[in-house]
Length: 382
Image 1 (spheres, one colour):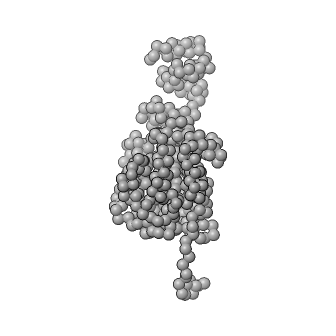
Image 2: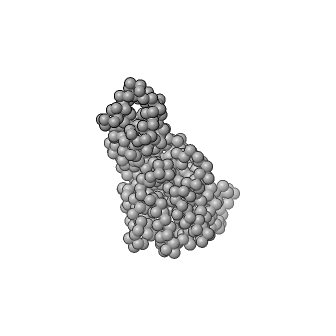
Image 3: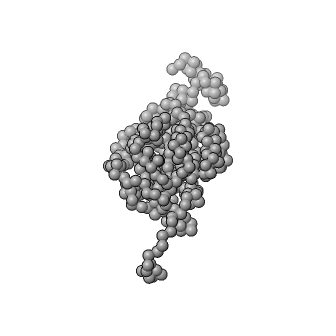
């Protein structure tokens, strides 16, 4: 033990230092709360907790700083002080890290598929791209949105790409079971084809394109010819209009430190990259999606706008500029699957998914109506 800490501890034990004075030492950096806990300044953990009540946010910051061993971390999770989802949502641990921590034998989605056989994206649809670095909540967002539409009879799946059909089902099932989607493999990119049914029962043909965070990050600074072939195909060969979702983890604001250096720079790059290659004219909307928003004390739309203006101003300004320059839609959305309990399960909150569903219904075109075949009414009793 550091001699200075030993002196402070002795004085505290002899009641020569009060709890208030002990807190002042912590504020001055003379010792840390971890020192107080580890060196048994208090007779019990309960007494320590009473003197130094710790918020979940403080626990998460200390975990991120490496102040807890793996065994201590498992203890915090077991006691329900933090959840696995907290660690994933705040960019402290990936699901793969947690699986390794608890020695779980789990697979990763899509390892059995041959993606070279996936057919090209069909025309006369709107392509919805979901961009974001690893751990930013892309799959959870997709799962929640798909589940909301499925549960409310607002989605029609298509089998043109059977891989995407099966994957969409797996996303819906995870939310139905109150679980999280399995991690995607590093080189994962594919699409899901469906029709969104609006409140007037009109169909909006959509194609959702999702990729792993590692693959998205690997695009940064590369020329078009060096991109993953499938991603290149989906971005540039499809003549469909596009909606772009840029997923930002709220923890970057909460902690003041991004778990991946300058995640916003990757969004700046992809927008400029698309403009450089003449694709921005095909973009109908750019949406910034702030995930893990349930961690925010102020969950108002203005708070989300303020976050972007303070932490992602260059990205925010670029989106506003493109909104005017290309006459596209720009929106800021927040997202959360719901509140998680200590067992890492949750009760699905449809509020955020419903907002995005309504937006897609408003901004994407409806299906071109084909004439009914002769005898249609008679066949179906009309």
